[in-house]
Amino acid sequence: MTPHQHPPEKMMFQLTLRRRGISDQAVLRAMEEVPRDQFVDDADRDGAYRDSALPIACGQTISQPFVVAYMTEQLQLQKKHRVLEIGAGSGYQAAVLSRLAGQVLTVERYRKLADAARIRLEKLNYHNVEVMLGDGLNLPPNIGPFDRIIVTAAMEQLPENLVERLEVGGILIAPVGPHQGVQTLIRLSRTEAGIERKELVEVRFVPALPGVAREL
Image (cartoon, rainbow, N blue to C red; front, side):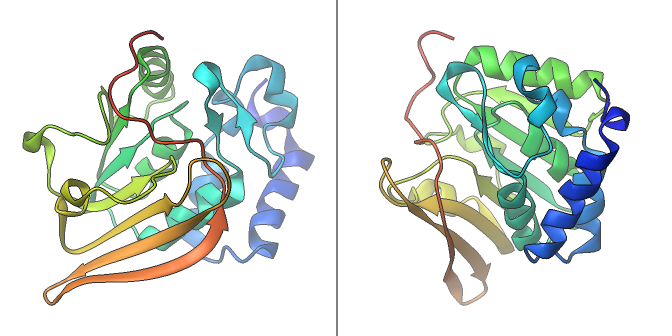
């Protein structure tokens, strides 16, 4: 199915985002432009535009649209920004980011997901996204720094080496808390004076695990 076969669902999709407080017009436009039904499993395509998370391969999920839009809005993206995403999943969040930022590097620990996301993003012409197979908790030193960082898996605490990759003026968004249960979405801003931290909303994400998965 194409997005054009979902007009009532897509209208409700946008209306739900607006009702829940998403007001940035560029973010709303990006959410409308990216065909979410192309990033979910075939069995879930009919429900692609519902405001709920959906399962994907390797025991992972594609996040609830509101959470994707909310995290994206909190990043305050500009076309000049270089963005790091930890946890590519199906590539959906990276595709949304790519409409608003200049360059996106998304890191995935599961080869199956990374390969599928790379093919999908290329097919859909998101050419400013690079998918890297790697350990998002232990990144090579030569890939930073970044203007924006977004983590789409639950971290029990933020690794200092991740925070250090943030440029002055940069923003980092991540769910922080226990792997099992509820996390708090944290927004870090790096200023000349240091790091400012703000707690946003409660969320639920799959755990961020160390290393590259041995299989899948």
